[in-house]
Image (cartoon, rainbow, N blue to C red; front, side, top):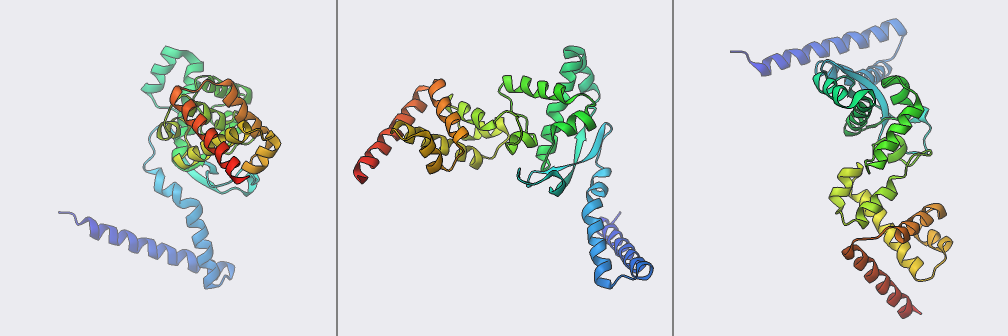
Length: 270
């Protein structure tokens, strides 16, 4: 009988011996202090450990790919962003062959596009249009943008850095979230369809409600934007959504009730 815990112990001991050997090589070969050598060792682990951890788990057709971490905000330059290693499936074998047979080259490309962006997102990373076009699918950026628009027309939001972090000229996911809510969908369903957290969905809808309440109480949109702490353009977009999209009855009733309550509160405060 093989003692797995014993094997793991020897693996750990071997690792410690290699760590010591590496640290000693730095101290002797580069005249580093013990502290500096260990700091370099830790940096090596942080950079390469994901590769060693995942390499044995990767399947044929998959690659290890560096992407921007979802934690990196839109205000950061790409060169300053935290990066994470993710496993992406470029070729799923029979599954992809079947898609190509049924939907052709364009259908297969869009299928792969949706798959890799979701795989990256689920592992804490966000792909960009440049990543997809130039490094993964080997096609033009305009082609990728057309594919993204095709998904948008089907009310599918792909979790790209541009859509999740509201960068560039990409479609705004906020509008899609509001539309889904006006159609009567609940927060959990909207979060699943748009690849956002429930808290993020709730935050967007709450601000939408506040915009509607203030605008319906005859506040100018510039004033509304200041009070709700939104950009004037986004405030206009929210109110335009309210005007242009027919809400299901219970959503319309909910908004009407909020407007009435806010009107009462305003009159009582005067």
